[in-house]
Image (cartoon, rainbow, N blue to C red; front, top):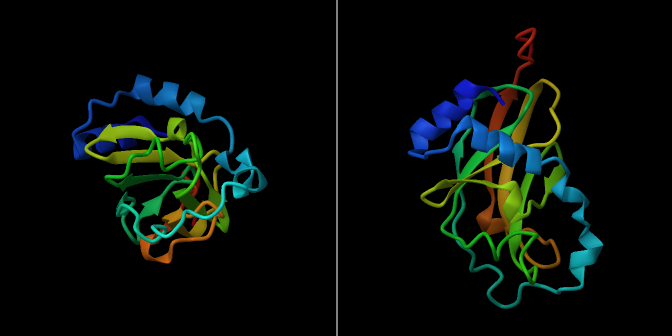
Length: 166
């Protein structure tokens, strides 16, 4: 992640986020949330009758059609209580999914960088290949079934920073 992008986010979202704080959070984000395992959490059952009553989600950055580098990040907003809505919740029910290239990640609260005002940054662990990509943020129930009404998607063009190729 480049320093100008971080300063841009901090300025745009009014955060006191510093590059040093981001580096510390990124160091904690050194494994794939995806590997926490579907089977382990499937036993918790569906989110119940309120499964479709979830807090709103909105992708703030990148914007649809944006040109981005190979290290993806997404800034999103939700008034939801993330300590209850991630894979690190004491009891996993409805939880956050972030997806690209058909890989759905289920971050824990510690893998989200809080910007304040209900805004968060998620940094993808692995770089992606250049080309058109879709980024999705959505809620799933305890059985990992997508809550369709919550789906937020942006399409981006990933460019290789070294060659400018897409």
